[in-house]
Image (cartoon, rainbow, N blue to C red):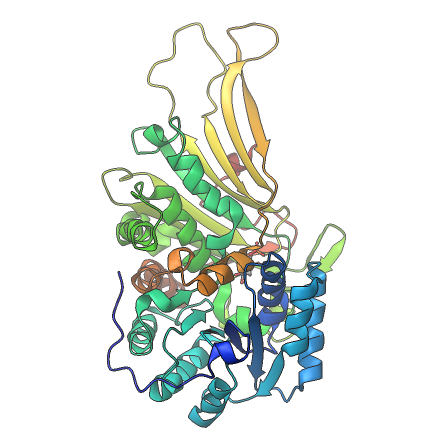
Length: 481
Ligand SMILES: O=P(O)(O)OC[C@H]1O[C@@H](O)[C@H](O)[C@@H](O)[C@@H]1O
């Protein structure tokens, strides 16, 4: 769905690209922040190294009084971490500039836009409230025609703010030029879901409530806060991971086949699934769990109590692990629980979607050992496909054993941020989140956030390096290898 820009202010004329050899400009707002250095620049470096974005000019801007030299060092260091050290990347580093600015002020934005050449991509690497103020200031001065906007998650801080931001952005550029980033949509294995489901005969016919008992989407990390209190302590695991990334994975796993992978069709299918998604039993107390890590050790590394981490406000009660059970209330999936979980500082990295199948309708008398259900596992790092099947092992041929068939795929050529940046440079929003989808994701989690705030679901403590809270929606059975 493309929303036409309405009442857009007079566009700012940009310097003609042909006069400079620059084909497009990437303007990063929030360039001195953590996200830019950790994810955006490495992704950009790798993308540049493929030669896919010739003639790119990079401009960084932020509140810090950095100079060009300091910014160039940051870009070079970030490119260096991913081996992006070729001539194209060096050229970008030489040409790049840093413009200190308050990106919520019209005058500053006007002069920033004046530094940009050719078609423009503006990347908002900013907290949601600053993004909204910056977009509002931009809406007052206008942007050059064809400008694409890239916005980091979280998109808004709740459903209402997401809707107002959508309305504001619609006055700036058409919907097809808004790239709401969810970098999971650029991950190679997440994208592999499309091929796996729709280019093979054997899986799709059984992916429905007649055959599937439950679906788990798990993204557990051994990392803790890692110095990100400023952002994370306000977001928490539910907003950081579930409201965004894991619901996108759910949409790709559960959607009906789109006729083509064009943006409007793929994103339309994702939207349909999310519109049909509801909390399990419509009850946040049944459908959610939250936990927070205490001091512990993981792989020989000591982690402090989350509440004692620098910058954390213990009174906020931020969770570092969230679980959510939902159902997709449509013909295909009604009654099948989808359990989403993401936790930090747990004992093992576990990044996978696990589809657990129902028992066969009738097993001939005489066969034993088939009690464990078949499972299809799709790993999101390492990128892996696994199938657990009951087959006959050594010894008695009628005593079955569960075998695991596993295929590893190498990671894709581009990191996820490189992939989503490519979409913006190509003007293709397929791998970004459509405005209504962002609002739907808030609709799904809002009752849970409210119930947590009201104390209806206890904040359980779990030791860093343990398996997580004792009262979990996802039992250990999902993790049997
Ligand atoms: O696996 P990746 O690409 O590092 O993504 C996981 C990360 O995704 C980010 O969006 C979250 O803010 C992090 O908390 C999380 O660790």
